[in-house]
Length: 153
Image 1 (cartoon, helix red, strand yellow):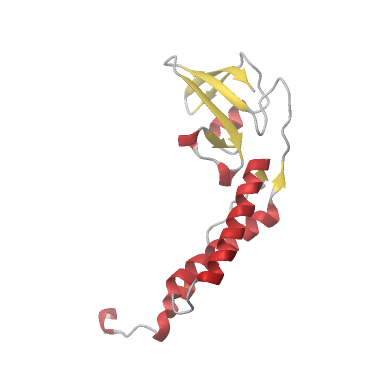
Image 2 (image 1 turned 90 degrees about the vertical axis):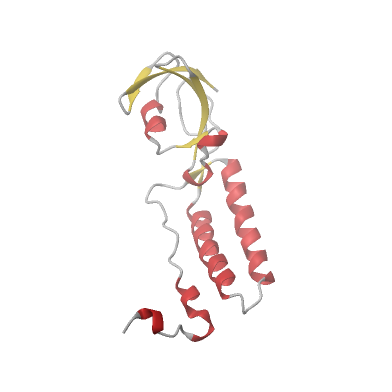
């Protein structure tokens, strides 16, 4: 029999089975700003749970899934305070010069706070891994291209 003619479960139980968001196997390092964002997201979702109508099965399922994810990320967060130094590390703001003479500045942050379009990359990104521990003037190869570290803040 075609599934097109099978009746859905009563009450929208299909929404109750949303798969959990995958959680990275990497250590959940966060900056102070990243930790604050995670805490704010958990608080926002907890508030949203209280405002959703019980009959909004899809909304309740989505919020419950997201709340499980962010609660787990909050529970595993390892705060890394700002560290000063001459080498690239978690939390550093780094400027690199690419082979085409274009400069790029970004901050190395935790996975959940990374947003390359806004100038932040995850510490597990290939570029971040390649330059961690390096100093101004060092040249590294990333994905077949060389970049030179020109500034660390």
